[in-house]
Length: 145
Image 1 (cartoon, rainbow, N blue to C red):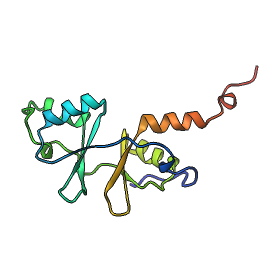
Image 2 (cartoon, rainbow, N blue to C red):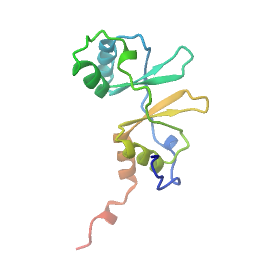
Image 3 (tube, one colour):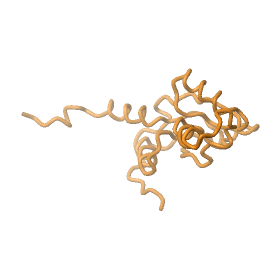
Image 4 (cartoon, rainbow, N blue to C red):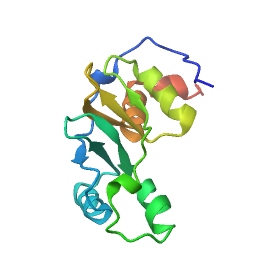
């Protein structure tokens, strides 16, 4: 069942900075990608084909559940651990629509694609929530004494 969209209005995704994606190839070793993710302090990599189209994503969670927990070697190719159906959105989507789509499936990331289906960045749930909170007037949330 598709998530019900509660709000399609409001500021679009393109109004907040997106994470610059780590781009990897399907035949890269999981261990090499994990090291680069640690170095950059990020938790996801985008796996692209030779034409720059998204094949899938590899997250720190994918590495734990599909490699470490299954006791596969760390030199396993990314193609064996990637998520081939990551959450995708458009830069013109509202922030509310992005938040709802992420919450509906428990996603921590959304790959933002251009009109040609090529990734332009990654929306991280932490950055999205932080941006939304910064826009809320805290005094509206605190009851008057």
